[in-house]
Length: 461
Image 1 (cartoon, rainbow, N blue to C red):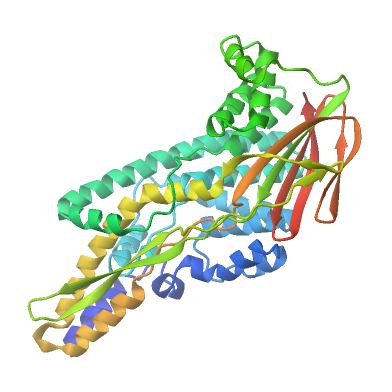
Image 2 (image 1 turned 90 degrees about the horizontal axis):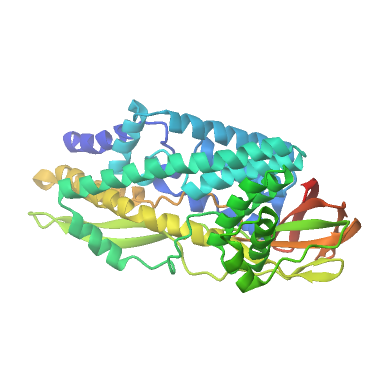
């Protein structure tokens, strides 16, 4: 009995790593973060901050969650500090060119438990949002140069993450060939619930358009035009982006682009002299949290003993996206155009990662079954039962993702006379100051019946 119990203890010894916690071993992130996510959806910002899990999923994800929720709660110094800590953790993670010993232990622990033991690496789109919110923090502090630095860094960090992800996918493919489990992977993927149409949204139109606004405010119209066009490629049906691209193409006399733009949208008409421009970024709702999907598998052995293994995979269920009533600018409805669906970006990121996740799941089933067979050898039914219980309890999906991001983002712009204007929603009001030949940027975030917002005056137009 002692001899076979040692096998189970050996399994636990493999998990003696930095990521070992009750949450990682017997539960998953979405379950631990459920109270905070629900509070944010209801617009209870302070409650959402207080409800963040005590056992964080690491400095990166914890910093991003705390930074975003604190930002909408208007706790700006707290938000800025949390995002800076997350940024430093990302730098350290990307600086490490080789897998260290601690991560080797994490991988070993994951082989016999679940993917939550592996160090969390943010998705490409999440890294883009990290720098976007750092930029917004700088703008709230009225520091344009700091914001410009962050939007420049966003592309660099996402590119590094893309290369790292490609290397991981290639490694997973080699492991499939080595272990001969390609059929297992295909069988699992065939039964996996479709999370919706894959839109291929790997580019962040929100980030591109914000970057264009900042470059233009800094007087760099050429770089602004490049990012406006990138935003237009992501959201080609957004008339506000199209109008912006047409306006800047006209100012720069882009002879290659103007005929096509003018044929569809007409010639750009300059605003009345002395007007200013208001640009509104309207974040709405909260991105979906990953759910838990399980596929039961029965693996027998030569003695007739066996076990049911649950392949626990993260997935996005089909849930309706809440749409909000329009904002009102000077009592006129603000009917913006969507520039980014964060839900679609999150689903696309999961679809890209899914084959590698299934490979690890398949390898884990084989490893756990070997432990169970050893524990149940020589008729040891107790060892078999203990191994089955351990395998069932520890198979948890990796639902770690940045769950406080908005569900989608709309943009809107309008030229207005210089002076004070009023933005309102749900009985709340924000004064918007417009200056002649200047841009006033308004940031808005709405969850439940609550709104968080501010405006800042940028450079010339």
